[in-house]
Length: 573
Image (cartoon, rainbow, N blue to C red; front, side, top):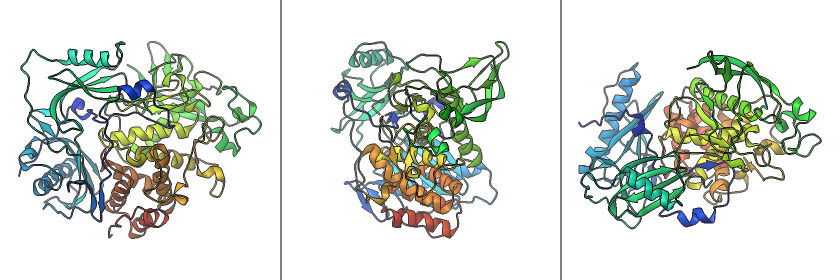
């Protein structure tokens, strides 16, 4: 049996082949971005069958019922490393036996590179990418989910088919510097930031296979043909949001001033007022602990840098919004420049601790080490926020209500990051999936706070209660399933409301922690072409594999199939 060896280099794991940034609010595409965007294809919708979703050529996109068991000698009480090795072995056996279903040639299996094995109680997800002639294949991703019993539970497949051999240029020719220069000139000739380049094999939409240089520059991803020097693909990734740890205190909104006060926007004292403070808004501040922030003894200063969150000035406006201060307490009202940093730090840190420590799902950014990097006053001051898949950071705008003042916006953008990190750079936005991920996590987080809106109240079904549902923008809702039928659910951000709504129905039925864990574990199985039905099947499969009771698995199935219209197969428990 041939078992692939995992790649342990952080740089290799960090390669992200589909890199659009994601924002809480839809934005207009600039004419410049439209003119520069090139060869960004829409994922294939596919043909849905009982056991999965297939492409027109018969290869699988997502397989819900692989019907394959690899023999395993894994014993009860095996270590994580033993479980991961057994899962990798079983996954490779599956690939050897069923490579044709995935559109892979048998002689290409030895070129698959194992990127990561991510383990959960009862199952593991083994993720691969293709290589050809020693180079990664752009856009490739295969995720095989294996139960400890050896049963193949779920498969996501983004194998690139129809690759032809490529001629490798001799040394001394085209190099990273030349590729970066071509990318810079294509983007207008201005100096580029966050530059990184790698050599890949690329099959363009016309079916031509070539060696290209994949250049990350600012928030663009540009592919340059090594032979001709032509830009063959370009995507604007911003289209659309030595210290000692110590404890300090700060003031924040939990989750926002309207929800904690049970007030409506435009009630007396409850308007943005160009970030003006009011007695009513001050009354909604809550004193919290800021855990594990950094204290620099040499400078005798405290700053918002910790193991799960890291405040940084990433992009304009450069207004020193991240405090670096002598005082231990970060007690600022919302009209102070540092309030948004404290609010965002607390909610990012709290949610990352919830996922990693409470749910026991180990997930951190793959793009760098340390806490989640965020800019509380970024996105060039616009009325939007974003997560960048290139840089792995969050940036919050200031137009309208400052985005970092609403925990829903903060957790929504963090949700894009979690989705991206769990799939090792293979987040899907098909049918607005990742927008729905962000809305689901944000709404669940807000509902778990004390003294919030209750079922039956209109604002209970809102996401972005403070930042949206006001004169600045309409916000979004979590009861979209009541007025829409899958797959006629809209597009982009709008479609994501269906995914969040259906999962919140399940969350109410089975409990917050159980549903959140199954939800995130299920996302780990998915890839960049996963649609909402595929993801729903992955989540319910994860719930069964995690050992949830028959009643809870059935309740998730009812949320997906009765309250909503996914028509998933409910696993037997």
